Figure 1 (cartoon, rainbow, N blue to C red):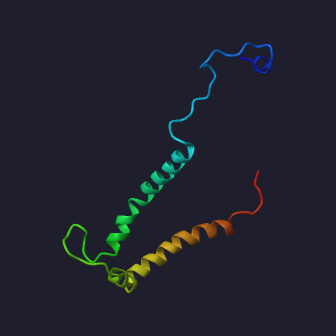
Figure 2: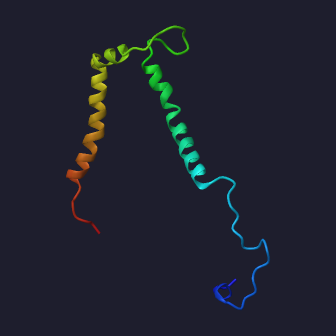
Amino acid sequence: MSSSTLTDPKAPPPPPGVGNIKRAWLPEKVIHYGVWILAVLLILGPIVPIIWSSLWSTPLYEGGGSGTLENFRKLATDPLWWSAVANSLQFAVLPPSAQFWLEPQWPCW
């Protein structure tokens, strides 16, 4: 169809059922919130058991245990942990800062 037939007042009306916009069987807001809920579940679903197991005193496959922060206390007092954190920060901070200082600040064409 050309645009002239859409605005032409002499054009015959379309037959019934042609050109009508069909409504969705679900309202738009239901689909919108459904997608958001699904995305949150898919993103947070794997994270929640990890946090739960980090706060539990025994592995989840063993019986017993209780919630505790003892694992984090052990981690905070472990010198190897802090060495790994320092090494990670060196790899995260030094290369970008070196690139900033060593690269010319003008466009090279």
